[in-house]
Length: 130
Image (cartoon, one colour):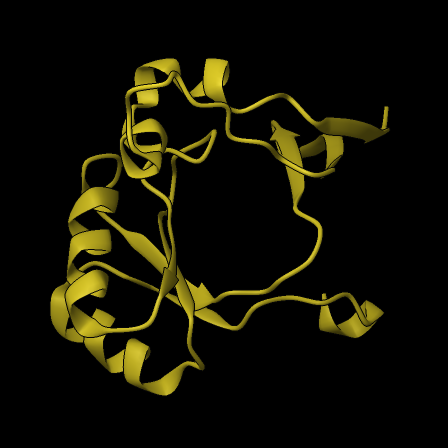
């Protein structure tokens, strides 16, 4: 990505807490922790600025994978890339994501409720490559 001047977040993969802490201390904050092989945002934690949040994020990510990615958090548009059999199948760009409440749950409960995630977060991705 750097060879084509595309923004990217520096990061590392790890499979143990010691490496995770080592990388956390190297990277600028906030950081993102996510499973290495999950999808649809499952197990992803953002805006991590302290070691307590880091360990909670690591445990959440381990529910979906035995390895995690820790990387610096970038701000701006979100892009999602779909790769099938090593071929680029789709590229999507997000626009103004919204969280829609149910009148009783906290924001944290809505976000963590993976079973109804599609209901609460409007699909605001536009396909930019066909």
